[in-house]
Image (cartoon, rainbow, N blue to C red; front, side, top):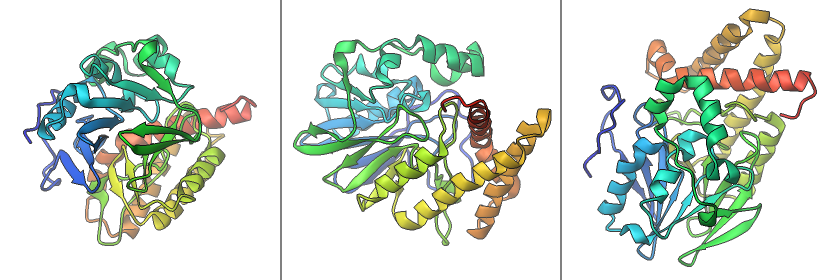
Length: 337
């Protein structure tokens, strides 16, 4: 499949060998690189059943040509896309949903009840993201966020089952990363599409010793106890695989879940350690988070240089640092997280 251009990519890192923007898995599941920031950072998952399609997370507006190319490669007409599912409304997962739906005449958006209103009227999403990135960078990364008509929106409460061409998709409320987050259990494959609930695991870090994984404490609704419970709830289904937005298919889930729980606890410990460091807190916590990640990578016998790992993890370190400090400050002020 030809890779549609993505205008803001740097040259593909020469350490990423055999880059595959489209990876097929058994039982009609495909991982599609949305082209966000760099290769293998963010995925959309395409589910095919009975010559119909469902997208689970869709990336930003800049991913649209890639998603449409995948449908064309699978010979799925646009009118046969039944659902666009977003695990939560963070813009690297859901920013392109509105513009994509305008091209999919029969598709409905499926979203957590706490997120629906922000995709119907995305003004608050746009304002908060613009405040973080600035107008120019926001446009560069996300483009125009298109509102979604309310009559095309389905809200899925906990344990709701959606029938996709005879294939049951079960929606579980999984707070911890965000209160507007659900995970999707596909009964056919006995696997979950986990959004950010089961953390972040980039394929560049895979070694013969296993995969590297860590929690996503992105602002502004990180809550560690809830995230621990959500992870355990997913594991209680004894799934075969998890499909992560960041990034792709994972197996060996029991070992990875132990690492993920450990990462949550370590992040909390580091936040407490630097809580009273005043103006230096952000820098000290950011540096400590990276050193923790680097230590974990060394235990996996990663052959990547420290500086290369730092560049790959820079965005996640910064977002996790922000999320942890916001969580801590709310906790100290007795505010809901």
